[in-house]
Every structure is written in C-alpha cells, then in structure tokens.
Image 1: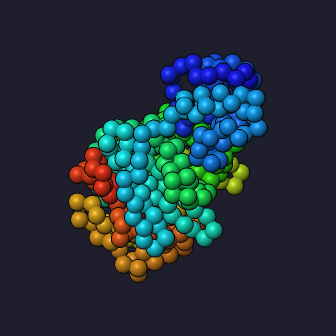
Image 2: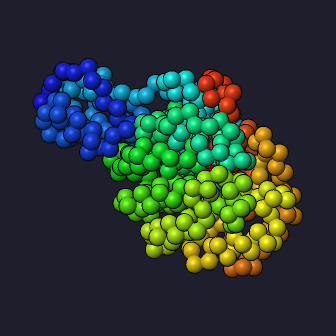
Image 3: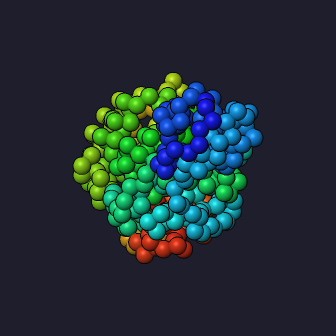
Amino acid sequence: MPDTPATSMETLAILSMTCSEFEAAVRARHGGGPEAAIAAYRHVFRTGTTTFADLPAFAAAPALATALATQIHFPRCEIAARHEAAGVLKFSTRLPDAHVIESVLIPDKQRLTLCVSSQVGCRMGCRFCITGEMGILRNLTPEEIVWQVYAARFLLNRPVDNIVFMGMGEPMDNLPAVIQALHVLRDQRGLNIACRSITVSTAGHVDGIRQLATHDFPNLRLAVSIHAANDQLRTKLMPINVRYPLARLKEALRDYPLGKSGVILVEYVLLAGVNDSETHARELASYLDGLRVRINVIPYNGGSSVPFTTPTREQVDAFCGWLSAAGLFVKRRHPRGRSIMAACGQLGRRDTALSATSTARGHGSGLP
Ligand code: SF4
C-alpha cells in the first residue's frame, strides 16, 4: 500500500464495519493492498487504540498510519455511570444525542457475559419491565451496539467472553442494526466472538425470528421470552402476543435452524400468583412439546410500576419441579444485580433516558 497522507475528511466508522468492509473503504480512499488496513483493523479491535506506527505493516507507510488514525471514527459515547455489586457491573453509556443506555457485565464461573442493549427504550411494553415503561425512544446504530463491547473490553478492561442481547430493547425490532453488529462482533480479524457465544433474545417477534434464520450465523443462540403459555394471560403480560400469538411463535421456533446440539433458551419470569401455578407449568410443558429447549425460570425482580410480587424460594422451587417432572431441562436463575437495578426487567427508566446519571435498562435481560 502506498504511503499516502489523509486525502479525505470522511471518517471510517470502524465499530460498524467488518474487516472486509474496512479494508475496501481504505482501499477506495488510499489504494494499495490490504495488509495495512487489515493490520489496523486487527490492532483496533485487539488493543482499543489507533497507534499504528509501530506495526510492521506500516513500516513503509508511516503517513498512512497517521492518516488512518485521523480518519478512524468512534461514536461519541461515554461511560456516564457504573455500579457494581456482587461481581455484577452495570454501566451506563451516554450516547451522542444524550440518551442513556445500560449494559451489564455478569461473571459466571470462568466466563464473563456482557448483556447489551439494542434500543433506547422498547416498544414491546411487557408489563413487568421498566424498559417497557419507557416506550421506544430510538434504535441504536450498529456502532452503538458494538461500542458497548468495545467499552467493556478497553475502557473497563473486562475480558468479555459471551454476549447476550438482553438489555434495553427488542433486538428483532432493530434487526438490520443487530445483524450488522453480529457481523462485526464475530469477525475473526476483529473482536472474534463466535456465534455460539452470542445469544439474541426476543419477546417473541415472529417476523424477526424468521428473518434472523435466513442469515448465516452458525450456532447463534436464540432466547425467547414466554412468561405464560396461554394466549389470554400472555397477552396481558406481553402485548406483543396480540400480533404474534403463541401458535405462530411456536411455528417460527420449530422452523428456526438450531445447530446440532443447539437448544432454544426459554425465559420465564415467575410472577407470584400470576403465572406460577401447576396449571401454568403444565401449559408451558405442553406448549414446548416437540421443541428442543432449555428453560430459565427467573423470579420477578421488582421495580415495574405494575405491582407484581416476587415469588418465594418455595414457589420457584415448586414451579421448577413441575417442569422437571414433565421432562424439561429447567434452570432456576438466582437473582443477581437487584441492588443496582441491573436484574431482569430493571433496566431503563423514562426519567433517566436523557440523563447522565441514568440507571436504565431491560429485556428478559441477561441477568436473572
Ligand atoms: S422485557 Fe424486553 S421486550 Fe419486553 S418491554 Fe422489556 S426490553 Fe422490551
């Protein structure tokens, strides 16, 4: 690649680009071969810096190193707040337009999972979810999604192993940006997070599930929030059920291309006295019949304006027991992050969506 100085004020939004896209953009601007661009891309995603001068690929092109460092653009995001409790770290990101989103780092055995947001707020309106109470403010861009991973790795120095799209927002409602972010996250010359280490969660957006299935993301994990297996109750808890009732959702789940050993993760937030009876467990087992699933039972964490009640340990154990007796693989998720409002359904508050000190966020969320 020739040693060319910066010739354009256009920026390279590297967090929204795969290595091939970045290399093509650099070639179009500066000409030459791919080596320096690939080295720069690798360097940014491995170190978080844009100091390329010492890279062998730039030995004969020092001006290009300077030019790329000038042209590479990061979104004007900043970490506005962080809260840590019991090993769980929640951080708020102030976006360029001052909206605030939240992400949560969750240690689990030897691995570290980052729960990312895909929207500011959410239009799905699940009754037990604080994010749902915000309504939708806007979609995140691919680079704002990837920035959360970049921030965790390079600003907070946390070695992220897994990604779950369970923060604020319904990923399927912002699918083009989520898909581009997936391409960037899995790029082996960049962040190199394998699809099998990424989970996309949905409240049951059937069209989104079907669209996602058309993309080639081998072993990408899918999580779906059920929360009730009869349409009447599910519609009360999750308005999305009107548009995508349980029967349609099941068809989409049945058609979803799971890898050989893949399962669909079923999230079930347990609300005392609402969806926690033996009948509800039986309905769920019957609904899931014929699907390869693993169920996460998540005791309601509190915080929503609808006054649901957190079930007791005995109620949760009983519900899990009924599912196990029906032959289902069920995991009881132990609440973590409640004290910092980082647990399931606790992300995102209307009054803080534009605040620098927000404690926002939501989905079926990465945290039990
Ligand atoms: S649970 Fe998920 S889909 Fe439902 S309102 Fe909250 S963020 Fe949206």
